[in-house]
Image (cartoon, rainbow, N blue to C red; front, side, top):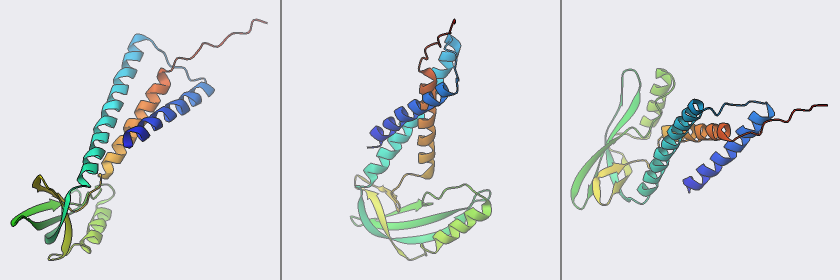
Amino acid sequence: MFTLATFTSIIILGVVFHIIFKKNNIVFSNKPFVLSVKLIILLVGVIVTYINLIEFDHYHDKKFWNKVKGEVVSFEIVGIKTREPEIDYSFNVNDSVYTGRTNLHTPLFGSRKYQEQTARTISGNYQVGDSVMVYYNPENPKESALKIAPVWSTYMQLTFGVFIISIILALMIPQKPKKENNN
């Protein structure tokens, strides 16, 4: 699903950038050194995009994990330079007790005050002793999560990879030299 949408957007963005460059008479050299730099940057964009598409597939697979009720064991706000919630929880699977820890994929950007405020808001939803829904890997219950979603940085990196690929492809499309009028 993400693969088709991603590569469609790469092609569309590449064409858009090419049109913008052509309209503004921006011409980039295709000398061997410049071309090799473009290919290296293109490769980086492809790798970043590919890695993040794998991340999306990984989270898609987690959607099919089993669910069980668990309990919040502890909640605290941790960190010195950055502040984030840390939630410990426990759950039972086949008469065995498992534990997990999460920060609920809290983004760590913004001021320390904003991070603290976000963590405190989250703390209102996760008090010690509260019942929570735990997703766990049926093949390995030690793998668990309270929230199944890609982290915000996955979206950012995927966008960056698509952007880089689009620009480099636009720069690599050969342009015909303009004909001179000899009137």
